[in-house]
Image (cartoon, rainbow, N blue to C red; front, side, top):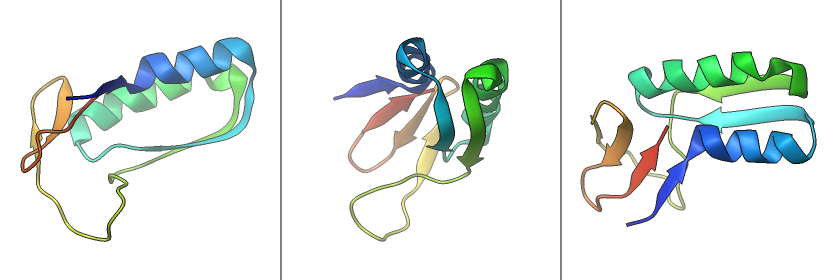
Length: 83
């Protein structure tokens, strides 16, 4: 199971160079708030930051996610994104 820490990844990118624009995707409302706080904290290094309340995948389909307090979990395949 792959885990991607979205806040840490964004901070790593911004440690190398600022971004003119940033688009993030997070399906869980509780994680979206945390992610938005991180983008706000780093706004001096991001020209425009937008976070969309959805996930992105390889197929056009509707999936169910479970709010696991610190991560968004896709129920069927147990893929996990830690925000």
